Length: 177
Image (cartoon, rainbow, N blue to C red; front, side):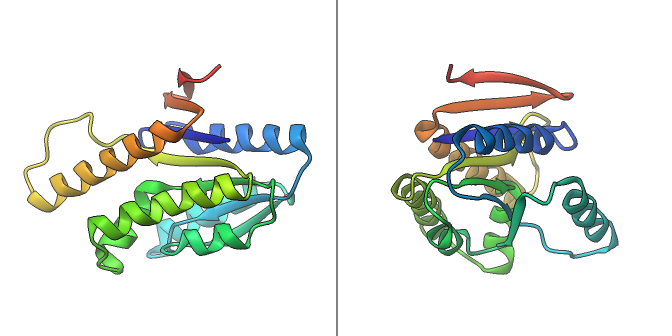
């Protein structure tokens, strides 16, 4: 099963996604519970956020650091596991600006995630930021990034059974039961 969760910065989307994934894990009792972290500890604020997020998660979670290559990690995960990828927004930035990946490579990799999740019967939760709801970006690179992120959102949502948007801590379900 694929679930997509989006929301603005500090909206509560990650906490909500963790809650959903944990509930799914306890309900299905198959495989393990994984947290795929995409952030790099680039500065003191990010180091503190990573440490806080890690401390907030219970010991049931197995953390996989995958700032660039997520697909390979999904192939190594036990079948029927529950997996939370947090977050697509950061991963896309890493792929574009650190790894210098092009659009075709990025869309193929995300398609590979979805294929791996289906093949391994994973309960996959993907978290991302809503960043296109403000003023249009003046910088071409920022506008291109937003465009790519929204295309990835649409690609993932098309395959998702459930889609949520978290607004000020309140989840709104857009797709699913």
